[in-house]
Image 1 (cartoon, rainbow, N blue to C red):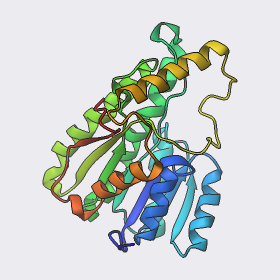
Image 2 (cartoon, rainbow, N blue to C red):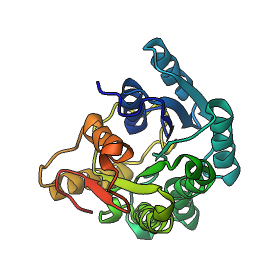
Image 3 (cartoon, rainbow, N blue to C red):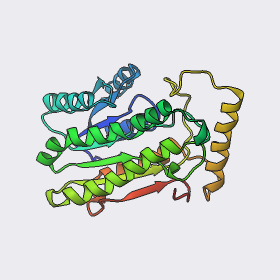
Image 4 (tube, helix red, strand yellow):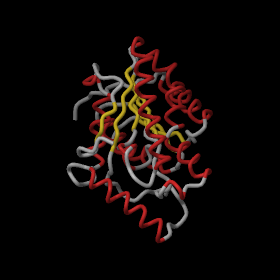
Length: 258
């Protein structure tokens, strides 16, 4: 592996599993000094594995849906490493999959809080430290801004896309790049922490299958991607190889542009 991130401090949220974990493994192999953030204790096991491989990493448990959680994370990272160079915002994900008329007001708010607010809060909390290092941000959005059975999630990720461009425009003069990837469906091991603890009904299972079928149908390649196919573009945008790219939202979905 190359050392694209040698000596750089990288914060990765939602790092206990899935895309976040794979980004951490690859970034660490390329020299990054990692701060892995998740509200699940499974993040501790990920850090233990990385340390066994000789990668410098710390684990921080936090609820990033609240400002206090995000602010506390960035402060801890700076206290530990003395700097912050790259922020990967990877928290978010559909909680329920159902036609919009079936969402309750509480579910709509929960979806937006899960998939928009962690990115809003973390960008704001990290900015003072990124300004000092002329660092960069990669937000993990979604092509589900055009998809069925998850309108509130689509609204939240549309917000992530909009703030990516607006923040990039506002801070380009300070040397800070802000980009996003928009993953499509991604094959991953079973979640260690379910997004929705309730056992799905037969109808809910059918609605979720509709989502899967639509995702594959609107991808030119007709399949889900792999974790490595998602991690590679995220790390490219985070690296100096992308030094002239900012304000971009890159679909990583086999041709589905969301």
